[in-house]
Length: 55
Image (tube, rainbow, N blue to C red):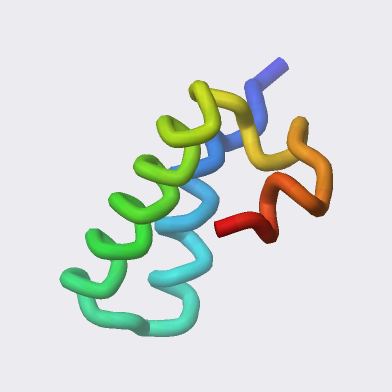
């Protein structure tokens, strides 16, 4: 059985579906990557609303 797509691949797919520029895609993916690293490499689905919304 195939594994579901990874988070960053899903982000890229959604951005491409909206026809954003490649530079916008790269910026969003880098932002998500930094967000995950900032939260000790935890997937956003594992975090509570307070953690996701915190600055």
